[in-house]
Length: 159
Image 1 (spheres, rainbow, N blue to C red):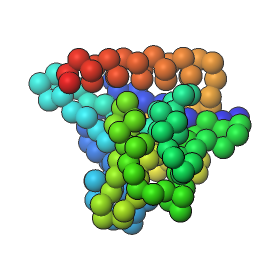
Image 2 (cartoon, one colour):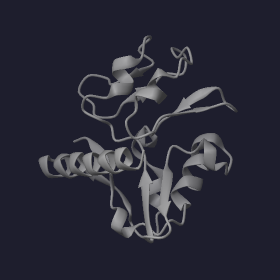
Image 3 (spheres, rainbow, N blue to C red):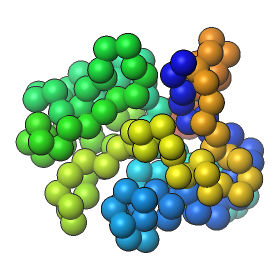
């Protein structure tokens, strides 16, 4: 069965452990800008949300990629990135409605969560279980879609 990273914003304290763990695991250095996870903080409201690729059903990053570098293998949920096919046009960065694909000038590649091939370190280090790696069910897909829509609407309201 496929799995996804589920976000529970009500549990997030904004500690950024997930951000550092991701950057260190993926790039070998504690450089927050190299992370595939970003924590948005609303200090006045005392609210934090960890964000990473939502593995959208209709993945805009896949739709705009001219080379197939962003792709979803048949029968999988995770959108994958092939650095060797990428021409660094950054269309995927522009297309992501959540800002969860970014370009890293240091490594000259696109950064996007791929769930660490099934062992997401961000989930493992989260002290409050704001991120969980769960089986995909009708219920989890519905919750994930609902959260994504709420977050997209909130971003559009601010913009």
